Image (tube, rainbow, N blue to C red; front, top):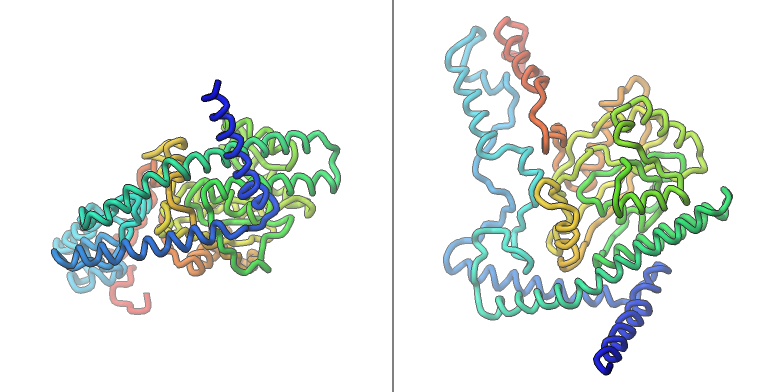
Length: 438
């Protein structure tokens, strides 16, 4: 009995501390300064660890300051210029050397596959060793790493799991109750309050520190918010500062329960698996949503998959055919404190959440960009590329023309045919081999 009483007191004390120091402040969107102190200590610790690593590595070799593998040096010039020094206008056997070189470059280090794996850090962040140079350095550094493991798994993980369960539980209960009210301004206000409060609690469950920039450009009702996609928590990151109508496929299990509860309180747009393949139906429902200027802005990730926080890949044109105002948002995570990228081909959702909750923290910057509209004579593809370029510039991300669907699919034949057509035009004399302007 004494053991049960002691366990009950510990549990009560634990919940009281969580409620008073974290839950209530996060619900009201205020901070007691605890997370700021934690981040300052963490930054100082990582800076000290980096100095120790650099001193240890300098004894054996020079520390490479590049996060890239750097295996090959690429020539990014177009085909016409690359072949100009090897051939005349007619076909020559030496042309094969150019295509062989490009093929070997792609095999050794292509610019697409590396975007689907975690970005490599310049220095060890006391979570995982992300570079072959970072081996045993010193006993002191090893002891700090062990202490960090104890803190992350024995202190932070239980606290974060507690907050996550509370946040998700309140979201399901709150949206279900609000959903029973008749449609009115009161219902909309309560729905936004529940979403904001619960998302803030869930972000605290990840020790999230988010810096929002240019808040005057926050997405407005009746518009479409598009952002680059790194992680499932992108939704939480954005919803902490404002509410959105989600667009996605209907799921089962816990995710299905959350979706069904949320749609009762807010007009989210959920599709069945069979409906997702019907582009006309999807477009119709999205157009109906943005036609009502009282409804929340739609949140869409046009890449269609998670990219590793270094690049922005091709935006699907469907989001830009709907019409209306596009509100671009750039999201950039700081990998020094934790890797937010979800490699869905390597980790399931449970494994991914465990990795997130045992990280030091999730730190990111969010930039709201000025609203953009489709210009006269501009098709959906060009509009999508213009928005993508703006997001990439603001977030300091590499802009790629490749489709993110290559994570699970083979290269489309159309990509191969484009190269073949370009080469064929050069053979028949319609290419731009001798034209500098092309």
